[in-house]
Amino acid sequence: MKFHVNRDVFSEAVSFVVKLLPQRNPQPILAGVLIEAGEDGLSLSAFDYEASARTTIEATIDDPGTILVHGRLLSEIASRLPNAPIQIEVDDDGGILLSCGSARFTLSSMPVQEYPAIPEVTGDSGLVPGEDFATAIAQVAFAASRDDVTPVLTGVQLEVSGTHLSLVATDRYRVALREIPWDGGGSASDEATTALVPARTLTEVGKTFSHSGDISIAFSGSGDREIIAFTAGNKTVTSLLIKGNFPPVRRLFPEQTEHHAVVNTAELAEAVRRVALVLDRSAPLRFTFTTDAVSMDASGTEQARATESVDANLVGEDVTLGLNPQYLLEALGAVKSEFARITFTSSDNANKLSPVLITPQTSVDRAGEESFRYLLQPNLLLR
Image (cartoon, rainbow, N blue to C red; front, top):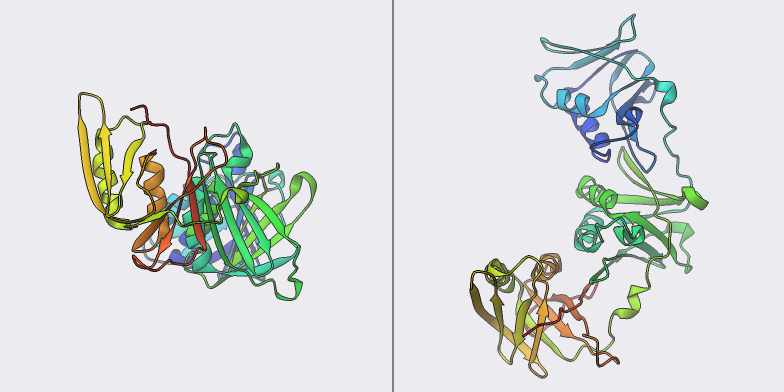
């Protein structure tokens, strides 16, 4: 095999396919990047049995063939090569020779025949706007659990219903929900389609395709090998779906939202960051909402204490509650609006704290679109 390729194009392609590979893989063969040179150009792929990435780029193919080379090493080399065309060929002993300008590298090849087949997706598909999808992922994925003890909570639930795609994530203490437009084309159906995608994989998809046009999302497979594919331009990412039943968290969102406060998002976030400095890591921050302000009060170790107030517009009775400051900050960062509405929900269970609902607010008097909603469970205050 022998080919010539643009340095920047090749470096970007290698970087893309290795992003989804785990830092440490128990099977060394899965650390490889499969490079196939053929009539359609140069194809690069990576696969670890759970997620795959594939892209095709233009190259001058002198001699078609297929090689498997250590992905992260190749990515590091490609990113540091001089500004000149890259030539890669296989020598008589099976070694991989890479040259670029005056730089020369000899890399060992890995056994292609031992590499697993890259998944192919042929199921129903639809389109979503790339920028909207990337924003939605950023607004939701952080709320997924990082504890592998409960795998279903480490994923983001994608649900297609009619002309909308919903993204939902929860870790039991909070729920994030975002809806974006979905174009199912001729295959549009009123029957909901769901897919539970690992949050880590989906986050990388959002970063990779954030500046793409439309993204094609396809569902395929059955049983234990259900997969989902995301395609934009010459790039495709597939992911094995998480098996299990995602909790029915939608029913937790309230219908009545009269009792609420409106705050400036940035002002509240900055105040929370300051006051929370004195708190122990897992301690809640005390919030008191009154007619025209919200005050924060924190007591920590070493007799440290902090208080601060910011303007707020409260509709309804005064409220005092404890909230996890980091969870609140992540919600405020996801709101993507100048103001945020914090709604105090009610519960039929008098012994259980009711969650607060956080949504975008266009201005103090005008609610924003509720395409993004975030539920946060309050903490018990011990004083």
